[in-house]
Image (cartoon, rainbow, N blue to C red; front, side, top):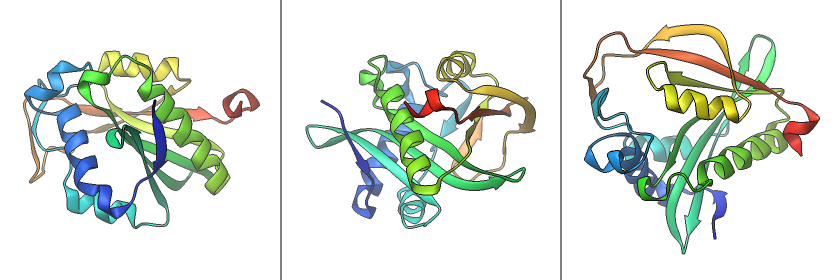
Length: 181
């Protein structure tokens, strides 16, 4: 059974390993969220995760099964277009546990937590435009493209982009009574 809780600084290494294994490298190919054909290298570091955990405007949740971190999601409170929003990101599920509803549970928990914590008015996220199956998944969770697209950050000490033309598309989900149910 999945237990969801707020991350602590001591979780930083486990969260980092999970995110990197879910997105990059050969281990990510076990699941359907891999970016291995698009980007190589790391997605994040333990130092970055530990820093994010300590920020008042950021909340990282972890999902555990038998006290092992198997899922994570990051929520960041942002002010955008006069609206207070929660930006969701670094959504990761252990590759061999994907397609079991854990990602959906993590998204719902993050949405509820952000609403309770910050009284936000909408949720948002960015997704690499080449990730069509992931975009379809987020559509099924109620997220819609805003039409805003920005270039992917090619310059990084952590990763190397393997294909040209990567972009981030912006998605948003307004809060409604059905969202909160």
